[in-house]
Amino acid sequence: MDARDFITANEAEFSQALCDWLSIPSVSADPACHGDVRKSAQWLVDYLKKSGFPVAEIWETDGLPAVYAHWPAADPDAKRVLVYGHHDVQPAALDDGWEYEPFEPHEKDGKIFGRGASDDKGQVLFHALGARAAARAIASAGLAASGESAPPVTLTLLIEGEEESGSPNFAKLLQSRKDQLRPDVIVISDTTMWAADTPSICTGMRGLVDAEISVTGPTRDLHSGSFGGGVPNPAHVLASLLAGLHDENGRVTLPGFYDDVVPLSAAERELLAKLPFDESGWLHDAGDSGAAYGEAGHTTLERIWARPTAEVNGLWGGHTGPGGKTIIPKAAHAKLSFRLVADQDPAKVVSSLEKYLKASTQNGVVVSMTAGTGVRPSRSAIDSPTVEAARRAMERAFGREVLFTKEGGSGPEADLADILGAPLVFVAVGLDADQIHAPNEYVDLSRLLRGAEAVAYLWEELAGTGS
Ligand SMILES: [Zn+2]
Image (cartoon, rainbow, N blue to C red; front, top):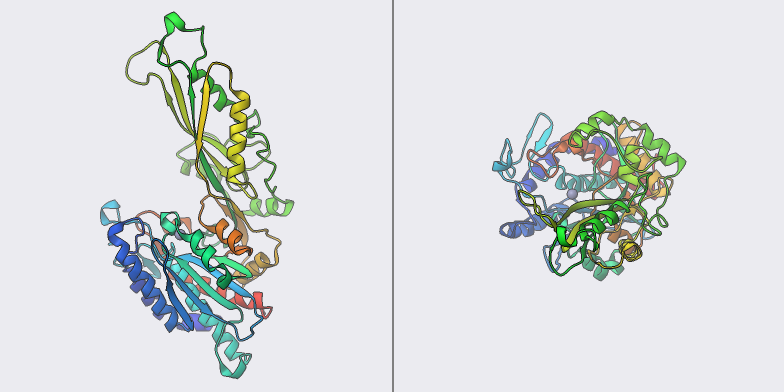
């Protein structure tokens, strides 16, 4: 029985199992649901054991538990693959505008409805089915030693319980378990494809760092009639500092800001341009923005996926109430954030911002700054053997050309790559249309089954036994 036949034969069981799991409201953000997050972890342990994983267990953290499962290949030298996903979900309540109870999942017309159907329980569960299918395909081909059933790669699942709460304990968990995990390849199944009829692989996520700056001048607000024109105005200084963050080509002016940016290759740009992108529809989704704008020399998709940014998120100071008040404010403030791309380092960007502020501050005011620690960006090269294997596997499953995307969101991907020291590849079948993080989340069952098939083929491709 080949992988596709096996997956089709198990469709009903898979759908039923997913609905069982989705009925557990594993909302990591809500302390009232933390018991359910534990229940969800235990449910997954039990299910993975039933699916054939010889080891499946709960891994405690300082917060909510992760699930670890391990299924070694028959060959002790086989590639070691780590799959990352999460079993916690975003909050959901009928009052938020759901047309059905978010935690009373059901299947209808080939779709599975319920919180977590796409993000990320559906995408975690297809790995259980894909692993069984890959093991079965080996056994059917007579490749298995002594009739034992095992996948062609040594497969580890690490399924986090706090992703929707910012993964506060995940890096520590990876640090403490890295000698046990030691993967050759990390597969992330927590992203989206371009469209149901345009399968794609995500090849990067932007990172993020934020900062707040304050400009202070006189010890109190001053009468602008008595003092205006004679001392520096903190609001003017702030405005000029913020305006100076970009040049006339929309490029960020911080010293060394682009030094570590890995530019898109010609092949990457060509493939991004192949995505059927409708700019006017996108502008409509962008709050009916009047025009596309950004760094000169780049398309909109390149700007939002592959280029770093500096944004002013808010600014305040002085008199903002009704009527006029003729003052020179004693202080002015702004919140900034930077979207980063590989290989930018949040700490380096913060120190570059500090340098810029120091160099641009005039006499008579004090500029101070605080900054967060940020999230590092991640990237996988489209010409790496791992990404090429994933693309072949997806093409076999979907029967059409697989393109590449990037994503703006930020998860624990950079930590996985850095701490475990292995390349990332994103294999996922979610869609923005799945209403992820929104009311009425659902997923097409057929798409999850293609996901199971894609990973079954990926294990063959990585083992070098792909057909
Ligand atoms: Zn997710």
